[in-house]
Image (cartoon, rainbow, N blue to C red; front, side):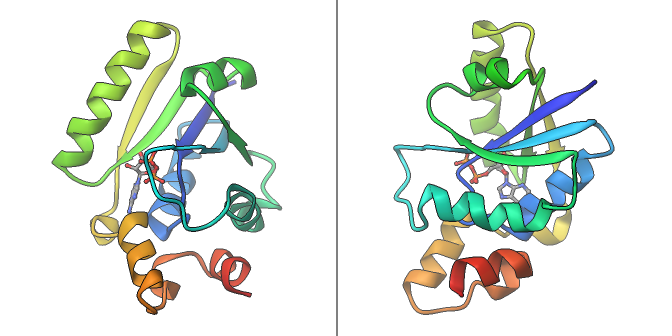
Length: 155
Ligand code: ADP
């Protein structure tokens, strides 16, 4: 059984993230969306709210689960029995950043493979950072996050 962890801050979870998860189901039997505690980013939504909002999307899908974790991603993979880390790539900056993390993870834990999926062209400009900025400045995140996530975050 192929199980992957899709780790991220997901602050908030966007239609770009949703697309990676949905497409990832053709590669993996099970995907665990892991909301990581990232100390370098200024959070907008609490971890609990993020987990709750993402769960509304996948309640009916037994192949996808959502949880949060603290500490090293590879340690969380080992804890939940995931042999793969799934990551999305939008552009060359993502690639440069992700390559370093993946290579370091590979040295620390050789049994875990990182799998990259290129985002769809229409999602390449969507980032949680930009969406947080829109929200902080009074704009609407509605076009950029899945409808159920939007309802949970803003109800
Ligand atoms: P992190 O804080 O770990 O970078 P993010 O929540 O920003 O977490 O992103 C999680 C993963 O989703 C990363 O692999 C990131 O590159 C990818 N990602 C972010 N935005 C998009 C998007 N619009 N389309 C596809 N993948 C994306």
